[in-house]
Length: 328
Image 1 (cartoon, rainbow, N blue to C red):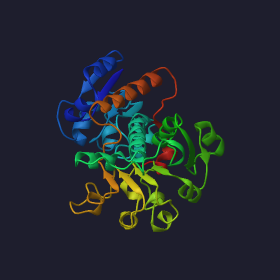
Image 2 (image 1 turned 180 degrees about the horizontal axis):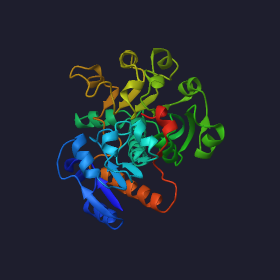
Image 3 (image 1 turned 120 degrees about the vertical axis):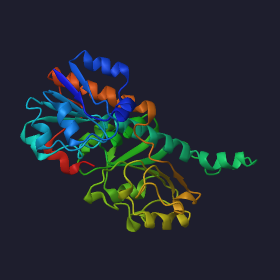
Image 4 (image 1 turned 180 degrees about the vertical axis):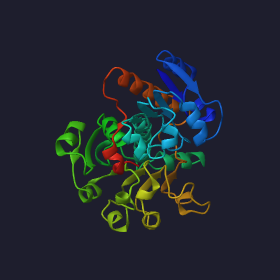
């Protein structure tokens, strides 16, 4: 079995450690791209010659007919990253090549970040830390425990469902909005399925886990912000496009909400953007998901799916053609 890693050397070395490469070599012949930067179509075709398995990642281009013609026996593309939209083509599906990605691994990091935001924000640690650094000993009036509150989860995909799992360890009421999740599945997760309007009105914490698709563009807008509690903690580790930022700024300037934003539209926001000065905003530079050692979780997930494919088992990251319109 020939396994071709198509991503540039700079990307590969961030994701795949030597032990991961050794695991791959125990499965088959491994071909590495030793050039840095995004591979060209010509480079990709050359690397892919005679391959059975392709491993792609950030920076890899579409699997065009020209690329695929060099690998007539290609059976599987493992995308060691999130969305597969940059690499998937109709020709790939027409050839019956299966596709998998690492969104489950990425989703765990996103959910863990959202959990951290939840605890620290409810505890009012951002303000208290600032006040103690400045010589004070801040009031604990606004501190809340992760207890007896309602936590709303908008989107129960890989990241959202893992966030629900993590929050199930706390004594909170979990509600979820996701049109593609049944009441039974929500209950199995440990949450109650509600409408978006019900979730907005009930929740003390709202964690957004939506893809960036036309249906979710500015889903959080002026009308929906009006439904939310003044004391709500709003967490966005998904995509900046799901929030109407002008509408959010208007509410934050009134002192409503506390927002934890790991994503914006665009990224980064302008140097003078209100998100950078408002006291009720925490802004982080898109660190949810996989960063530094977290990249290794992506590599291991990719290898697990390869092992599952070889063993005839289901792949946790498999992407189907009919689901592409729902993906970020």
